[in-house]
Each structure stands twice: as C-alpha cells, then as structure tokens.
Length: 177
Image (cartoon, rainbow, N blue to C red; front, side, top):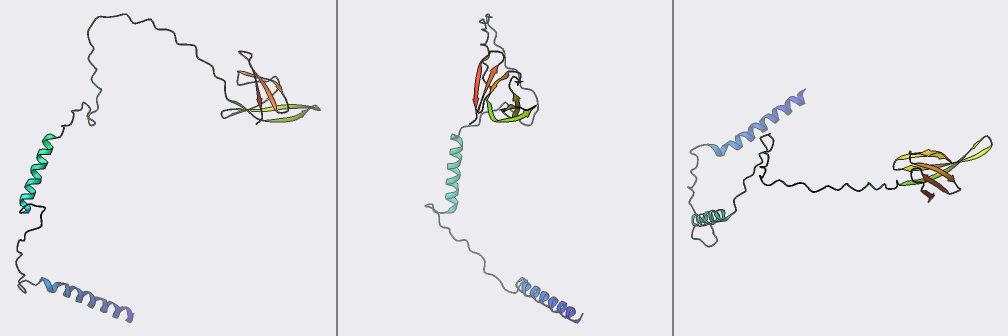
C-alpha cells in the first residue's frame, strides 16, 4: 500500500510540475513580443502578391466566359414521375409493308457427350449401359431406351454409342474420348 501511495504522490507532483512549466509563457505583461512587420513575398514577376492575385482572377474569369455552358437535362434524379411522351408527327398515313414470316427456327444438335460405358449382368447376360450427359444432366441408358424425349439409343459398342434422333431419324455416333 505504501508503494502505491508514494507512486501516486510522485506522479501527481510530476503532472503539476509539467503544468506549471507549460504555463510560464502565458503570463501577460511578462514580455512584449516585437510587432510583426509585413514583408514582401516572392512572386512570379509581379511587383506584389496583390497584383498577381488580381491577374489570376482576371484570367480565371475570362476562361469561365469562354467555357461551354452545361446542357440542360430533362432528367431529374430527385423527382419520380414518368417521362413525357414524345410528340407524334401528324402526316399522311401509309400502309405498313407486308411483314414476312420469320424463318423457321433451326434446331441445333444438343451437346451430347459420352461420359462412359458400364456393364451389368442381368440373368446371366451382360447388358451394356451408356453414361451420357447434356449440359448438367446425366443419363444412364441401355440399348433401345429413349432419353431426353428426342433421342433413342440404337446400339452400344465397346467404345462407341449410336444415337437416333426420333423426329428426323438422323443417327449420331459418339465415341469415348
């Protein structure tokens, strides 16, 4: 307890001493500082700083007069209302040209990939299964099965699968890569 007490007293005396030391320069009438004299500053060619500031102001004013004025906008980000409709030009009505029917959409082949082949034994007979993928879908199909409502597996070889497109009868061969 004695150590803490003496440390508190020494710390308090140190704080008071620092405070008194910093206050010595603040006593009024103790010393009279010399009055500040205006002195000329170095300028870039003009006689005084005042003349240089006036020349800069004149140049800036002239430059602002020559600057393009901003274009008025019809958009106000602080008002929420619909845009004004554009005026319709009145004139002679003409019949619109005959619109041709757009061409029939071209059906592109899906990116079917043969991911792998598997075999399983059913009643002592080995049956091959093709593992096909279209984008993120995976199909496990055997010979004769239909998948994706558009294709049927015609044959499954050791490393090749033949697919038949049901609508057109086009046969596509996929090989393992």
